[in-house]
Image (cartoon, rainbow, N blue to C red; front, side, top):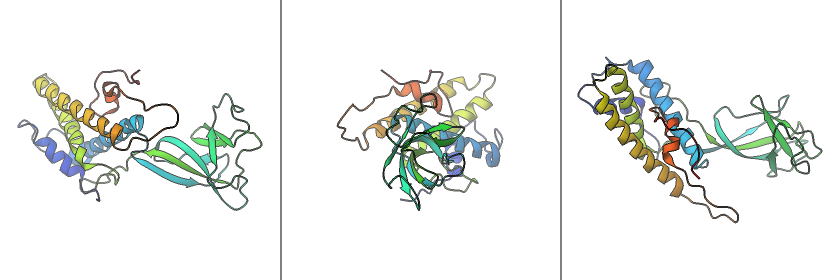
Amino acid sequence: MAVTTTPQDIIEAAYAKSKLNIPGTIASESTELLQLVGRSLRGLYSFAARINPYFFGASSDVNYSAPGWAMPEDAEHIFRIESAGGSGANVAAGTRIWIVPFDDLKADAAKPSVYLFGGVFRPAGNPPDPNTSTSLRFFYSKRPATPAALDSPLDSLWREQFNELLILDVAIYLALKDGGDGSRDREFAALTQQRNEWAQLFAAHLEHVAPPVRRHGHIRRFNTETLLPLLAGGSGFVVGEAA
């Protein structure tokens, strides 16, 4: 189904979280809160990329432009690169292109490889590497499109069953900004707790919505609390993966 939720919908629902919220007085809707919704959405996509990079997956074909192939602008986490072929390409379409470290360009010298530097993927300098006629296909976890206006729909890949995460992020911001004197501390704490519980549900959905069958290794499990700082409301925890 198409995403129909707008930033205005999120903001109005956030106002309803407290009788102390007076619309249009604590923060500007058309600038401050619109940007906040976009920032909150971006935090959730970053959160998702750590747990399941395929959930908000996208792909893009990029042609060579000296000195290499520019990283797609909406890429949050690139997890695979393949040759997309092209006239004069030296690597067949569908062949995997390996990413090697900048400080070890011969890490996989027998395979077509590139390295990332300055936002551009460049040939590693080994014979099998893709030539300038080869287009590359990037597979990645994307960043959300930023809503242009209060009545613009959210990113097309967003899952509206988790709108409450966005609503609570805005409500937390309003309570924090309006309660600088400590008058809304209890409300802030309660809203943050609710947001964190919804984050747990979101993380669980990311983990079990489509678990892959792997020939090697195992599915990583994350401590959601360590990922909360990626969200707009923050948490005070240190980012990192659970053992």
